[in-house]
Amino acid sequence: MKRFLTPILVLLLAQGLAAISLENSIDQAIKNNKSLLVAAEEIAKADFQYKDVKGTLLPQLSLQGGYTLSTTRLPDSSIPGTFDVSSGLDSTPTDNESYLAGTMSGIVASMIPDKTQKEGSLAAQLKLEQVLFLGGKLINGIKAVDRYRSIQKLQYDLTREELIVSTTDLFYGCLLAEKLVKLQEEALQIANSHLQRVQLFNREGQVSEFDLLRAQLEVAKLQPQLLQAQNQYELALAAFQKHIGSIDPQDIPEGEFVLPETLEMTLEEALESGSSQRIELRLLDINTEIMKIRYNAEKGNYLPNVVLQGDYSLFTAADEYAIESKDFGTQYTIGIGIQIPLFTGFSNSSKKAYAKHAWQQTKIQEQDYHELIALEIRQAHQRLKNSLENYEVQAQNIRLAERSMELARLRYENQVGIQLEVFDAQVMLNGVKLQYFQSIYEVISSDRNFKKSIGYKL
Image (cartoon, rainbow, N blue to C red; front, side):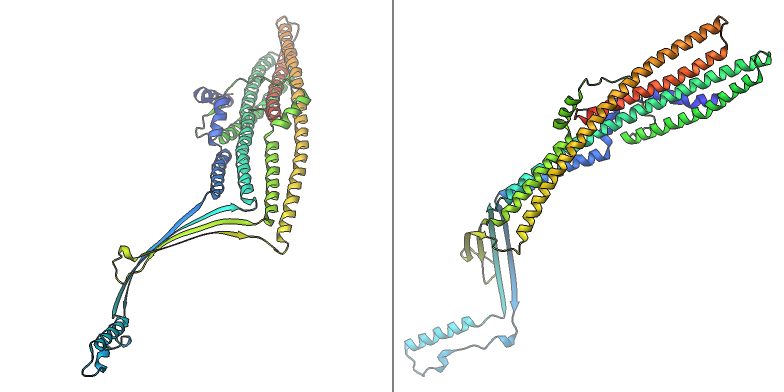
């Protein structure tokens, strides 16, 4: 008996040391869930992508330039000898002839390069480019990126809602598995107590060997059931801790296993709420809008592209390394560029037709998903209704089983009934309790799924 009770005691002690509520479980799952963290990063990426595309509306400025120093050494063979025009004059040249000869010699000498040449140069250019008109493609692109940003935010909300539902199911699944362990433990205790009494009566000859064998078989049947219940609880607990990203193996769910506050809503009201609140439908609507924007952008391929361009250049050239103020020169240009597509081999027509069919396709898919959402709401509404009805039935069965247990005990105390009737009533009560707890779990799960199906904020 002890080897079956020890794991339960350990679990109960662990609950007292490191219990975690449903609210804390949801907070921890939101904090640690990898899919939700990835969705948050996608929002940040979409924000910066929107800013990147929107920035193309503003003027694009760029500055480029360079500073260069060069040294060139010429070979002797490339440098001609000195040239003197005055050597060819008469012995008694006039002053004008001497002047002209000296001038010609100076001009020729200036044309002969030095053996070592040094040069410094500086160049800088400021360039401006401003888009004036691109046939609507740029504006439509910005709209599409903005809509994509909205999709990422809604996708995050959808992932968060699904995470809350799954965390709730796993949390109450652990509580249900714990209830099953306790019920199996209680049933085994009752079976062992009954076996001890039957053994005593058998030694006194008051019961037959068949009754003793039946009591022994009941204990033997419950022992593996208790082991199985313990294993199911440990597996459910491990799945729960993995789901919330717990690093403490003693984080054990603890809370009231009671009915939630359900929404009193007709099917028509639920369908109306779902059609206006479901995140998936809003996502599909935005996706359809993006396809329409893409179609409008493709129609703009037939329109001209107009761009304003301008630049201002500053440059120098000096026959030495030092650059002085007199060495600078400037140049500037400004103009408008226009590009008009005349014939693209029917490429633009094909792109336009493709975008139109893609837009029509998303509208059909959106309508189909509306119908699927409506079906999901109907099923969730019916499941919640059935689970509530089943809970009422199980609550009535609990009262009947408790009354049967009370009557069996009174009959045995008044020596009208036998102890076996009390044992059977106890076994029946345990079985009804298990079905009762399962009905509560079904109501909790159905309620969460119904609220999610109508777009209720969890």
